[in-house]
Amino acid sequence: MRSVVVAGGGITGWAAAAALKRRLPMLEVTVLPIAPPADALADRFPATLPSILAFHGDLGLSEADAIVRTRAGFRLGSRFVGWGEGLPDYVHSYGTHGPAIEGTAFHQHWLRARDAAPFDRHAPAAMLGREGRFVPAGEAPIDGYEYGLVLDLPAQTAMLRAFALHLGVREAAGAFRTLTLEDSGFARAIDTNAGPLAADLFVDATGPAAQLRSAMGGARDDWRRWLSCDRFVIAAEAAAAPPGSLDTVEAQPTGWRFRIEGLNETTTGACWSSAHDAREGIAFEAGSFAEPWLRNVVAIGDAATVVEPLEWTNLHLALSGIDRLVTMMPGRDCAPVEIAEFNRQAAAEAVRVRDFLMLHYVTARRPEPFWREMAAAELPDTLAHTLTQFAERGRLPFYEEETFARDSWLAVLFGQGVRPRRLDPLVEAIDPAPIAAGMARHRDAIAAAAARAPTHAAFLQALHRQALR
Image 1 (cartoon, rainbow, N blue to C red):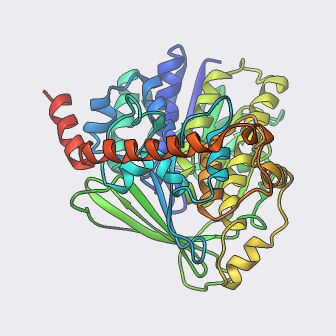
Image 2 (cartoon, rainbow, N blue to C red):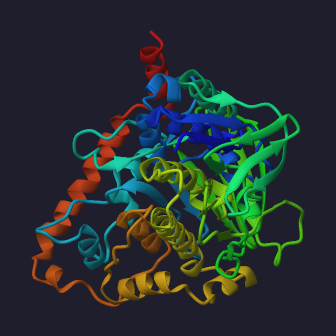
């Protein structure tokens, strides 16, 4: 493999170009900077999962470059409001919710202590977020968690573009016209009004239209029967003072609305099902290519998989696809055995993201027709297996290519009032009295440590002073 052309000029496209050139410097990498369309979800939503920090680290970007100079904020998770009628709000944060006890899972003891505090009170990140505070994980009890970012999207795009060009990526001129194919079915070149762009490999980062991958044939698998939200609106308003470290996701009669507080602005909007709400919005359709990589064209991000922005997985899927592309780069012949493994892993990851998003709907407790319809939907086999195992003894099966850890699944299940029928018998053999007292001490220690932590704004100010010395 000697040359790659990346079609797409948003965060996804420039991130792909930077990663390819950084990790595989012998490649000639060219970007055709097609502006992200309105429905390019990975390029529209500023909230990210913790995986973006590892991606920045793999590129060799410093904290000053990736966070301070791009005016990014930190996010510890999402606060879900109204997803269970009569239930309090809950926080889905990233990381552990209590330590294992005598070799048994913490959540099993929490289930046995029926009068225990809400599950998220045992998560340091959730408690910090509720207080509007932030500090990286350190020593107990403020440990065992991860965090994402709230991006300034134009600044992030500009940073990745500048970094890619600094590495030697070439930016092509011209507007996309079509993808020219060889008789073999391989792509020969992208035709533009400034001339053809030929390469050994083409990366499609053009958003849901998948302008390159669609030209190769084959349709996306349709997931709308499982994820029926298909419209969204998004807007910016003045930044909160001070910005919080949790975003808010509030259930509505036909979908949900959100609020994400960044340093420069607060992003608000809503996502809903057009079958239950006829108001205008930006349209999208949930689905995924079974083969995002076909011959010498590989779809990344929204070009490969489209899901609603619940839990902010769109950019994560793009960055994960880029990592997989770099790690599994084949020879120029794009041998089918290599491409098949890439597609197997990509499909497994996308399916479990789909299942996790669907989990929110099938466990929600709301009376409106939209919510009743979603709760009654036939489950995909993978999600049905997960929920069946959980319903019996609170156990969650392991799947390869999971985006969300066990405690993330538990945070949603318990936050929405779902409980298993029975407990793990290993837990029944342990005396509950000292466990209950220990859980209370753990909660109190987290609350006290969270109260002493700096506010999100104060931590960011200190970080800026340190990074820009």
